[in-house]
Length: 316
Image 1 (cartoon, rainbow, N blue to C red):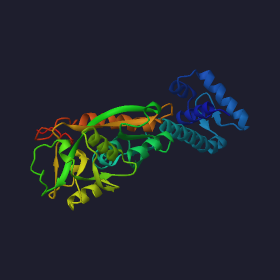
Image 2: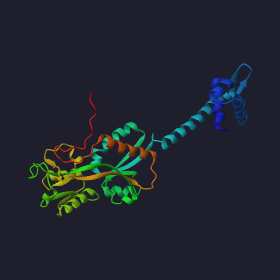
Image 3: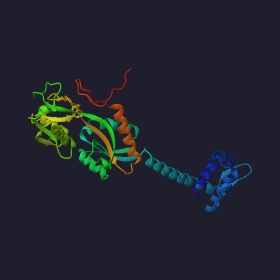
Image 4: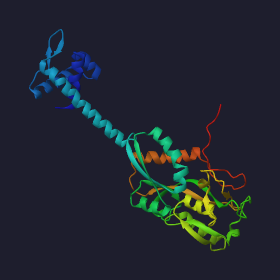
């Protein structure tokens, strides 16, 4: 029994005419009649009463019709599910993100992605850059948004944007009223850094060394909000990405640009040679296009500094 035979049988049963069914199916009437006859022979039952004037279903034909419809519905459903699985209507994507991007950029990206692809399940892993890089290489996440990776030879890297770094001090700090600050002025300050697998802490230390001094690290914290809280309680100063200062509004700490801009590159990385599902490719494309179209690059600290904020929709 072939699927086409079932389709031919249903078409004749619906039209009650071999001529009309053949026209609808774009096949010749002899070919249609031959396939229906083959089906009857395989079933051992006559499905139609044929006369010169009309075609009608037999009792066996009426019994078989809903069964044939059910089979074709299941086949069509299976084809649709596989099409969606191989397409972008359904699927699952796991992607990683560093905290500043996770808190302030990813919600905007996922809100629009969910509207466009409601059938794709997105699992988010928020962690430090080194941890995310390992997860990408080991296949735990499909891709990640992080700073410049330490193992670029094993990764496909797509630049996304440049993020400005700011000095963050308590409101009463001597530098709080400054419009800009030289990094070298911070030689005697106590720093609060992100520790663990977060690459921002390492970057700050490297920047200080490049400026000619070893930073005094008073504390290492596990999140951007903890770093800000430590600064708020006068336990040290910090160097944080501008995104981390966007929300919530702060009235007890101050963010100051550096005279010589300090920035870090934000990239999208995935393991070289690893297969990317259509769903993951759809999200990667959405990440890139959303950031390019909705977020601006911060590169000039001259007050007023340009924030990395969503571009407002046109009015009028």
